[in-house]
Length: 461
Image 1 (cartoon, rainbow, N blue to C red):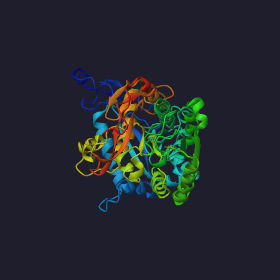
Image 2: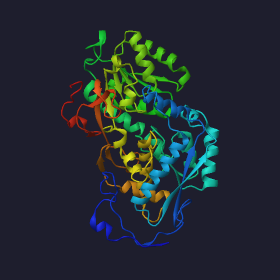
Image 3: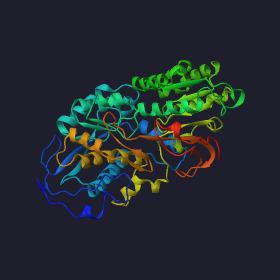
Image 4: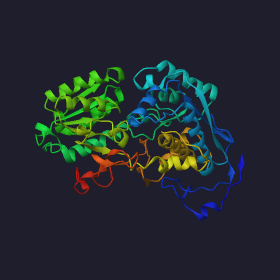
């Protein structure tokens, strides 16, 4: 389709969205966009599916936990989430260069269960939904591919899947160019943690432990769910520690909310019996609730290692854990400063096009939709999954409130830097105004360069 663009706009600015630190370079376009360049793409529209699972139980549980018992808190409904997604898509349709097209979101009621899939089951439902997306909706992409079973089935059907959390770089590479996420890969999380452990923890006393463990020679344990991808990254992290990694205790646990307390009890008993001074918790959001509570009950006060998985490195999550225990927590995080809800970039973007209140999880929805539009603009008018990949690989490194972003061959999540953080129970969080918050121990650094940075200031007010 011939498109007449505002050729003069990029003479006035270099960024597509001038106030946005992550904005792609400004692009003016006049010409033919190629029409139907891929399934789900026409001369005027790009179809994107939006999966609505009937069971909001798992998401609602996490939201309620992060609300910290606030009785006035109202968990997001499917209607809240859909309304927010549509508002954000409206914002990006107005601000990004789409070469004469607009993105059209198509919600559909899911057969599968996101909660079941997150806990290791639900393959049949995930498959049925992916078939529907590919053969009935004919989508170019899906922005709700938040579980590995569903994302995997989408990629098998050549639908771009955005959102699967904490799988390995190898998982993405095996499904290129279709699988992407704004959540860091577990490979990156593991590399950041491994680098910090080698530089700051190994062969030193447990200076930040409590009770009888304080200043004992450090003995590390890494705990991760028994999901194959998480275990792969845990093994790689331990292997990266070299000879010292042979002395690291590796423990796993099943992702089962109903058995979480009993599982945590068995883990704490084992950790205490083995004299572990430093517990590296590459856990799900809820497991530290049980671990820290039972550790206090058993008079066990280790250092707690934060790996930046499953929102554990956010203030609302840290506020859930036993504060006497979490006062000994520190580690690596890719999360940037956590602003108040009204100042979140996603909320600001939404309210630039709509006047109502968006969903509580607007930030995560915004990030995933951002990746979609970023890839579409960088792909150019000839939009296909391959040019989507090529475009994101060509995206220059940008630095903003969430750190440095850059994609590239083999890298399908954007994070390239991290920071070391520690927990201060007396700090008032900017995010929700409650006591308890993470403090940066130093400036952000590109992973792989920590040794060149100044000494970290852990537990220094």
